[in-house]
Length: 251
Image 1 (cartoon, rainbow, N blue to C red):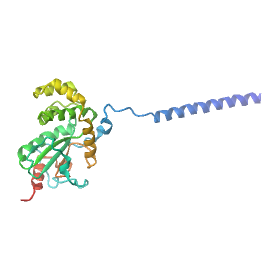
Image 2 (image 1 turned 135 degrees about the horizontal axis):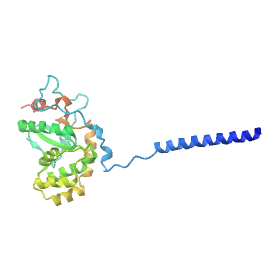
Image 3 (image 1 turned 120 degrees about the vertical axis):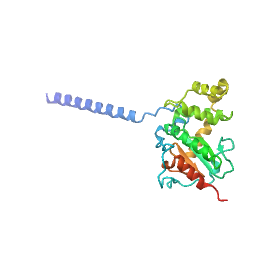
Image 4 (image 1 turned 180 degrees about the vertical axis):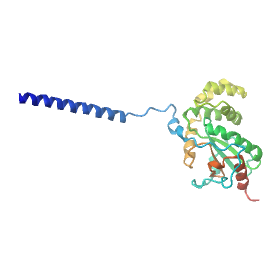
């Protein structure tokens, strides 16, 4: 009788151990499961959490001390090399002041920043050279940034930025929607669609993103004046005007 109880107890013990093993290895398998592949080759380098605080409104006054550069990020040497001869720009190329705005077309704060920068360009276009540099943060922005470079080849870069911000939505714009914008801008929508779909600028978009990240840019919108990043609080019309004037080379 005792022998029978012994074997029954042993069987129960084995069953318990087996159940523990099943639970343990099941959890282990879940923990080691590979992450799902990104939808686009640049997407894995574009976390959606990188958007930074919204800039102040264009009419907001700039309190004393806010019109400053970010002291936590070192100035970029040879900052002129951050752009190429093919990058569209507005303003005065011989001014000696280079203003870069890094943006993502699906960033809500970038949309807020856009009229601020346009106003600064309108008032200080003769005092600085302004570049809008796409910096992909959201995976759904890849085709839209490709569309910007395609539009640039037809001299429609700024118009394409304006149009994309005007119809911005969190899911991003489809190629069909981008083609409709292109048609409104006087471009051939079929040719435009073919060029965007080919994605000839994708590797450049990815490599440029890594270059910009290496400078200390972690989110958008970010503004740089002559190689120095400005503080978030300085992204107002008044501050940008003041800092552009201060950056002008001495006569």
